[in-house]
Image 1 (tube, rainbow, N blue to C red):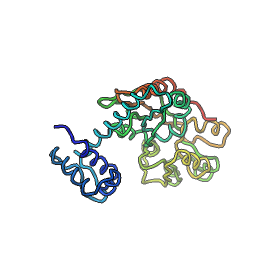
Image 2: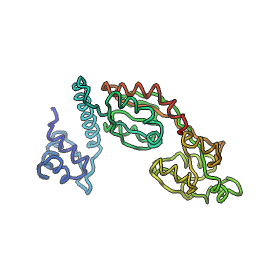
Image 3: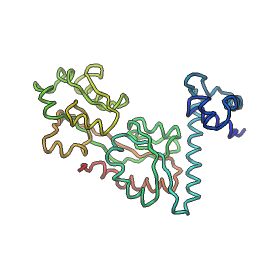
Length: 300
């Protein structure tokens, strides 16, 4: 049987706001009406979709439905944009999930000209490169930049290049914390800088090279690519920074590569749904042609 659109809208609002009361405000109906519509949808599907907690949570069945509805919403937006495509004054909106380092460095230099020329706006969600594809799977975005190489069903994945990272610190930091050399014991004491608790590049490197897990050394979580790099540049700690952010600094001596034998390469892939709007096709073309060159060009 076809799904009732009003019931689906009520469920979608509850899932996204995590509250029946908040969903009621979004839909401009009463909370009891929202509850009734969600109950009707659960009855029709024979599944519990929402756990009535504070905040509300979707069940596994609810997550499956949520992914479907969010994807359908994006497809509808693409259809409307495509049908209105003859009007050159209209902008098309593309939802993309991107890792913070790409966003902070090469993404806009790569896309700026195309975004303006083709009248495309971006709605970006930021996550670590190992997690962005989950937002695509959930139907929240049209495309993503991910370290995951395998395409999901209904999607395509293209290799677009490798981001090169090096472990660096200021000379003053090295003098203070690594005066006797960089080894297991000195790394146990020196403060590291890590993006967030989903960023495992730093901890994986130290575990592989020195047998140190993240509980064995002090660290700062700084979930902003710009502030993250600035913290290292100012001597707050040491950490993994992309090559193109540090080329000038390593050359002029304001940064030192402290583990030259342990540089880290992160392969990146462009994932998108097979069904692409004209605007997304254009972005895909530019990404595939220019991303690798842009991501490895040092920032001036």
